[in-house]
Length: 256
Ligand SMILES: Nc1ncnc2c1ncn2[C@@H]1O[C@H](COP(=O)(O)OP(=O)(O)OP(=O)(O)O)[C@@H](O)[C@H]1O
Image 1 (cartoon, protein in one colour):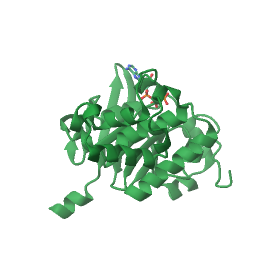
Image 2: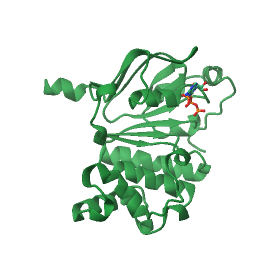
Image 3: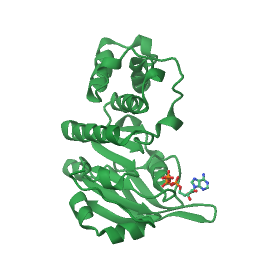
Image 4: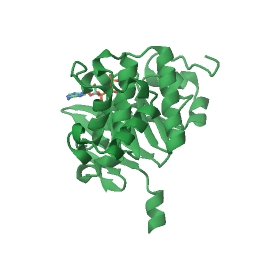
């Protein structure tokens, strides 16, 4: 019994369909994310990535099919401490809010300890460790509004990390971040994945760059056009990729 639970996927999506009114957005999605996977979910604008994430997080109910989180139906799932979620920065947080980096990360512990001024020593240590993990420890007492977009995004990841989730979901975390910073950012995710054996689901437009970092790739455009290991993805021809995207795609090689 325990053995079979260990092998259970962290996310299991079966035969999922979603439509807004008459518009079919997701069709026949079948996808498993296993413990320790670092999955890159890619697709053009409007391909259904955010809708799929909302279905995974139980924020939207698919009309057909099912999503299991840690073996439980997403709609009934309550162990949110097991999941960290970082949405696109702009929509997730008002950065003019007068809070320090330390306080923002402490908010990730709210569910456990109430207001951050009552944090115990052990919780302060957790906040410090989360900030170290994203390379932002030195900015602890700075106001969140004073940081660059990329730095703020790191802080939001620390906020998601502080409760030590087993699964971290990131929805386009590098939007508005320059290419060089995005690269360092992906490297940081790769390190987190390796050092903490964390399961990661990264939604991104960066089809070329992300394949240097992830272990698995899922290409979505209403339905899944590809789902497999990164090395299999790299063998997919550029023509096939371009037809899926509806325009030419430049897949960068490792020398870039
Ligand atoms: N609340 C809504 N009501 C009606 N249609 C919607 C709604 N939200 C999204 N859509 C439509 O569903 C489709 C998929 O949207 P979704 O946001 O899931 O795509 P996406 O892949 O995340 O896009 P992007 O990369 O641009 O963020 C789009 O055609 C969009 O216009």
